[in-house]
Length: 426
Ligand code: S3P
Image 1: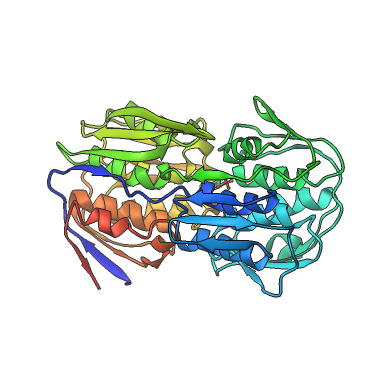
Image 2: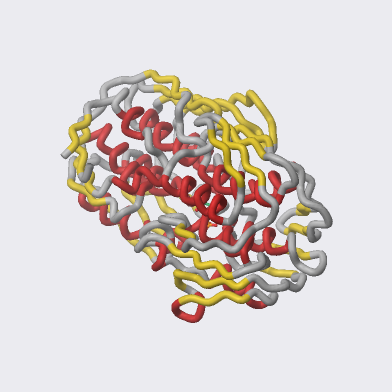
């Protein structure tokens, strides 16, 4: 499947209970199961390429995995050296978190990824890990995968990160679990906190005070994880935008994590005028519930704070901005440049093709809301760019190419879109 033609949608009212399970939590679940004594049970694991790669790596590291299609049971008696090269595919989260997990494991490990991941910066994790004694190397002095890791003894640390990145934070917290003393990690802005919540739930000695996390090395193995992975707000957000730009449409997005570090994009869409309400239905490790979104005319907004809380949703939010009245601005979002694609240029170039007046900045863009027009847009191998422009197509029609990447995070995306409009695949 290389190209899809999307027709404009007419009114829809949908309850969606099959949004892809959360990617961040799925990666972490299988990795953290390796730190537990006993069998972890993971329900509603995301069966998409990125997270299935993490599951395959965990198996290659010696974990015993039983999967009945509904619940994945994982038990481990320690990380074992692998005969295989560990392939993270397209996933930055996979590669960066495994760096933290493996840097103290006994043995030698090679982490690699696809042609996109092998171009993404790894120095942000390899540098702090090397500074505490890790033995890691790769191209560009340890910046680019393939990475080679020989497990080593790690020293305790007080690390002040310059970037608000949950991947860097999680990598260092995993390393801290095997360091030789109590560690602290401070970040400039709070990034998503699934790692802290899950490790705490498993019994780790971890304390969060504002932007500072203090964590003690493991004395014993952790308690096994028993988790039902909630739906992914980043995946749900495509449908929030779909409803927000389609007159009289509405959606209910069920079973989504309502962790505040993950739903900021919904809050922004609400400030732009969309009618959004939240309903908490469960609370394990984090609050979970339903998000109701109803169409209302949108107006422009400036987004410049808490960027890490909505970084993954900015491509879809840019479609809402292009449909809003007035000029919207995104600032302080330079991290977009090092995602699955350079998302500042892929968003700007895509919107220009759709006839929207856009200006590119080093750290963001300015979008003058107007009439989105049908165009041919290539995803540049980036799942969130592909899905964002397919959503734009619900308004004006669209042809989007390079679609295989959608399988990295949301394999049933097209089944859900087909409930709103007609699709033609080439
Ligand atoms: C993620 C953290 C974020 C996010 C990514 C998933 C995670 O990346 O963009 O999709 O699961 O920790 P950064 O840590 O690079 O901000």
